[in-house]
Length: 261
Image (spheres, rainbow, N blue to C red):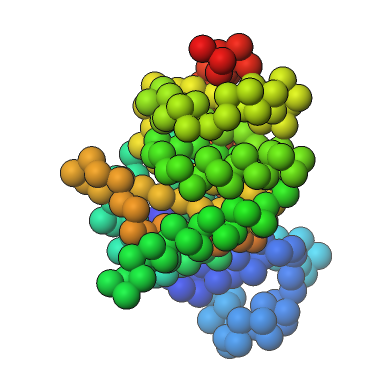
């Protein structure tokens, strides 16, 4: 596909408009607020590149045009995310996010960067725990350990909330050391708590029924406790669940007997 044809703002707008369904010239004119003569010229270019077809006075995307529209949406979504969270993504190690989810980074456009401040050094931690305590379901991957997280998870599981976590071996050892082993193993046997273990993680994420939290490492290998990307919305939650699934598929399940050792 020639990228040149989509360098025009008008041609991109037409492709994205037709992504919603076939339209007459008059509908395009009214929707885009552009003169018909300009739209006709742009449509000619799109037809030349087999992105658009005309039938019964309606313009519609070809299969090539439909795929191009999907790519345009992904690009524009990513651009929106970088407008809101560019500093966060540019200044951290994103190698822990699989490529297929980096392509879909635009799905996080409803999220916001939350930062701790000198006046509130634990702001990120407190906000995360508050949101977590209200969850009805928890899926997470964590290369970091904090006792408060274990306490909240134990309370959630005790209240019947299903929790599934992917830990590194070191983090799992710390969790087992500070948790009640009998309650931990009982929750695993009951199916309320599922634990997986993986060799390495370069991303921290928790997704619940209402929010996604994403934490990253700095380029020097230190985890950044002072900054999180937090938000909700159907697309962001789906993105978070897919990130969890990516690591769960690459992890080893932990049995209840393993937690009693």
